[in-house]
Image (cartoon, rainbow, N blue to C red; front, side, top):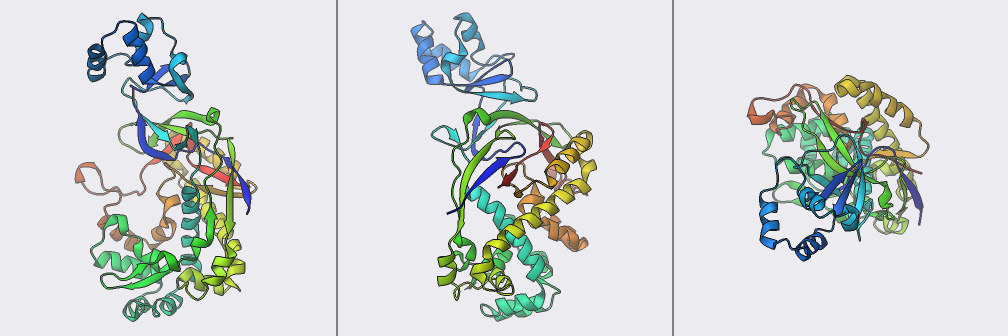
Length: 397
């Protein structure tokens, strides 16, 4: 078992899908109280306020103030008496209608899910396997053991990415499942009557990578950030709970080498072939993972700096941030909400394909303008910054 320290380098938000609404919060100077509303309502009723009056207020809140402001001032209540926890505020506070995306918590304490961290590592591995071993001949050799027709189709292309884009251009594809084909070829596959090949988790060597949920992060490191969406025609701020830069926690990461050894004959994807070229797959697996992480996220940083002008008024701040983390000791990677399309996909490889990729992304509806009036020339068009920093950068030490 290997326990690593994870340090947060820029505001990190991993959401639950839930939001704190004006009913749940009461802002004060530089902090927000997250309220125990049940207790507050009970106390108000004990003070003589009718329940129907409270319900009417919740249904039609005042136009110029937070919902509980009138009662708190009228009865001289202290919001801290009803506070489940408090959040520092980075950036301007919103109007009464502000909603705050909640950070994932266990028993009220924020943590980093192992699935989020493993997903970030997996994206890097996909990128490296395709870049180093994705030539048509190597992929044909792997796929021919599962489906000869697909293997022959791949052989008519320069590499697997060309085949992938050709199939997306030719076939009807659900955008949410556009990467299923590559995932199957790289990580492990089975024949399928409908799609010819499909991803098979049991044949995926990545199952040997065990990433546990992190230890809880102290709630004092959780804050509210106003996130600026750079590139939007209309400035639409978003508020999120995020772990502040500088926070640290421990996470258990290890490779089950016995699972790799026992399933060596069962793994059949391009990744396994890629590992074989380096030596005994079980022995080189972990080094390959961390090389992939270092290479992929270094390229993401380079691309961000290359397009620094897209951060507009924040360009110098963003450039300074990337300069500061470039040579950071450990494995720097990006995860969570606001990480951006490049960090969460193999987009770095796709954009190199020029017009072929442009045709595919339009078919997938990526970069479509609101209202369906054509496509943005630039994709991705928007970037999210919290306190002037690109979101979601962490380092594993």
